[in-house]
Length: 307
Image (cartoon, rainbow, N blue to C red; front, side):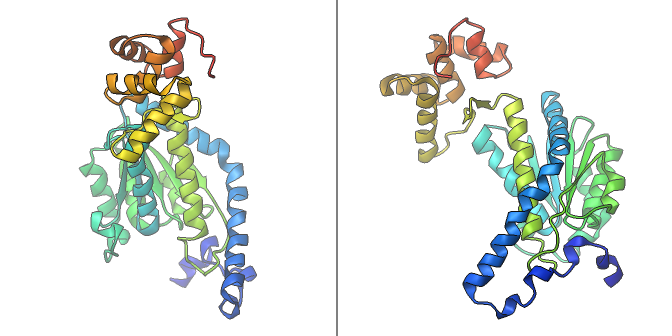
């Protein structure tokens, strides 16, 4: 076992945090913060590959495909977290972006013994979700060698999906199973092997980039406003109306009128106001322009002075 871990960057002792157990609380925090500041610099060289991964995802979405995150432990939980935020933020159906964790839903909270050690379980989960050629599967594992994730990636490729690997080590077994590798090597952890820290943070940053950029590319954002949010609670209703107002600079009464007439659909309300059309026409304009607000308005020849 020690030989398996010796070659992993994530399993090395961090010389900068030696004797951390002898420090007071503020000193510990300053050490952790100093290590965290290294994360973004380590990700920057990966941006071209992250962009390539996002382009794969955009093409999948345009063809009716789905995005799956697959991981164990912290990596699996991060995938579920990012996927679960897409419906309220971007108005996507829950099936469009999904997180799968070794051991199933119970593993989100509790450790499931042996779940991450089975390649067969990973393959079986790909079969259960009927992964196909239109889908993208992102395998996430700090070590790059988690059997469950490797089994899932291998079966996903066999089923024709585009497979991306996200790891925090170089030259891992994951490389043999992926069409594209994202190796976010952030160095040894503050506490040896605690990959929920720098490795997990790097993973979450990259997942944010993948889903956010993909959603922008398929028309879920207008200017820098999330215009496809699902106003499913009082806070989000207020946010939806505020977004309409910020996008249109219309008076409050007009915003409320358009919001209600559109059935709470932010994009439709914005097009109604900026293109000066009724709800049915606004919906048609959005349909004709693949849901892109800017193009929908431009197609009417209406100036967008607010932008």
